[in-house]
Length: 55
Image (cartoon, rainbow, N blue to C red):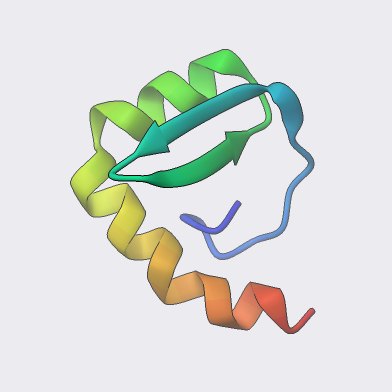
């Protein structure tokens, strides 16, 4: 999960589109929690993505 800095499995049915970007989650609840704090969570996810993308 990019917002936490760790890779995680995803459920292809648990997703959100926020400001034109697709975010996959491991469950619907995780997606709802992410969306509720989208501003800070997206910022964390963007910062961590480069590191995770290299793994």
